[in-house]
Image (cartoon, rainbow, N blue to C red):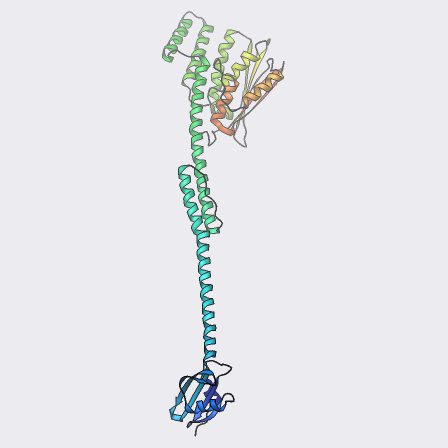
Length: 396
């Protein structure tokens, strides 16, 4: 004899629970268990073992029977068809809702990709084409962080390329202007229209004649004059301060011979400053300015002082030209300062003045070059140049 839990058998007969469902167990075709109270008609239907769909009391039922032949038992499950359909409708509604949510997620994902990825990428491609055409210079920054990082990186690269290109153009222009200014300074210095070879040979012949006839003052003047022309026409673009001072000494010798004992040249330059490189043809025009303008109505002594020293911290040469001449009136000094601090090229074809010198130095050394101009009418005029050892990167 075997003990069987009827409740367990009843639970096996259906996968769901319905309000009007009837679960029954038949043993030898006799109803031994029902899940709820049944009417006589329902009892008769259970005993008959009707399979499939049938109507009972105006209600359509669906019957499902499981035979346990070894035990001579049957498990019958009667479920109203309407309850089954209602459950199916609920399942269909749930499935439909899940499908709609899935479609909505797909639509949102597609919109997100188009709006935040495809559109920004398309905009970046359009911007790159405009950059190649020169219409614009940078990319439009998208909102998405990763694409924004890419765009910012590209923009930084474009900025570097633009800066390098602009710097290269400025370097070429500056080099051209510096070379042109140097040649113009040399030509305007002495208005040389004669072949240098012919000029030097002529001066040497005159010096030899002065030496032969024992005229030392004329011999010295011709020697200094030949050295002046040779330096102005054949000197390098960059020379040492020592070479510039030698050139000034030759010029001063000529002027002193023209008006003996009128001018006095004093030089206070350190040994380190003598080796400092600087642009050629800078010092002599400043000395010429002092003699031509500062000493025009000045009685003796006309003293010209040249001072030079190197700053130990930055290696910059501080070069000062001071005269005890008549000075510059305040109004004219202000006008001169205003012109000198402008970066436009000085337009003086009759002589090389302070403006020309400052313009050439600014072109060659860039922003590293500085200067100061001081004067007191009736007492003195001082021009100080602050010259770096090497030109700035822009000017090289």
